Image 1: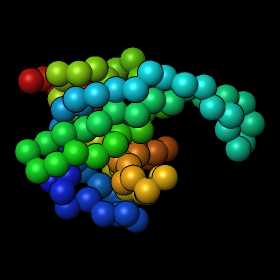
Image 2: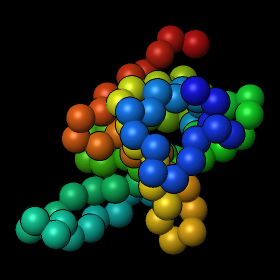
Image 3: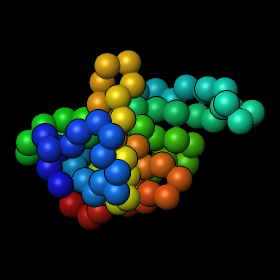
Length: 97
């Protein structure tokens, strides 16, 4: 699916692209208790860009210049910006260039 076609509320999303920017990881408190690390990557394909939320071990897997694929992800809007999320049931893959 092309990034330009992703809309808020979509589920079972499959999208891929290249991270062009990754924010530094930050620690957040979870609603369920405990803490987690989170970072945001800007994912780009030939049609546009979207924020990709990365949690814990996903942060180290993703870097600029690699090609990533999200399977069974979902789209939401956070602070007015569309975000692609891998979620509990999704999968993040690093593809060979």
